[in-house]
Length: 152
Image (cartoon, rainbow, N blue to C red; front, top):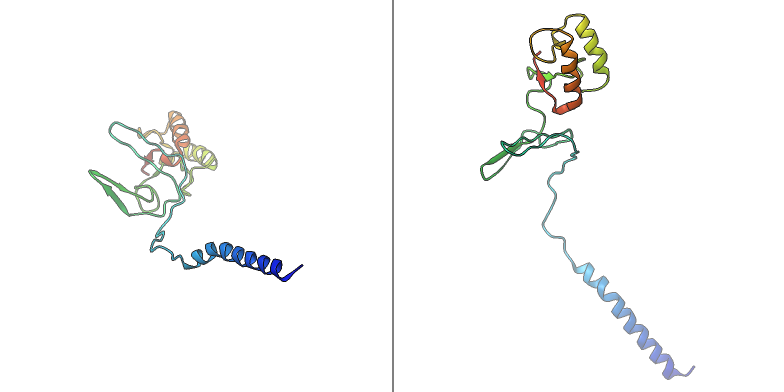
């Protein structure tokens, strides 16, 4: 190989390195924008929604408990179900064992509550503990966390 062809190859290599290095140099000079994600949620499906007079429900995993979001004439307070939980004066009717969850174990608890005349077995809210409450419990169980609230 003569020196002229070697120089030409070296010049082409240098050009190639410069062209290939331009995107890297541009990326090194880029600065992050002043944006950040201040919060996030882990939300799941389920709940209810409606139309007409508006109804909205949700599910677990809402970190935004107590924060109110507004827009126009609308307001939405995120977080935990109002009136449900310790000290709230109410509980999900299907939660018969008092653990705050609606699970198959609540079926056995309902039978025990029914047999003992426990007021928690009155899931249809008529003030009586009768076999009709079993149907009320089934309906409440199928609605899960969106089910009716009972007191006690």
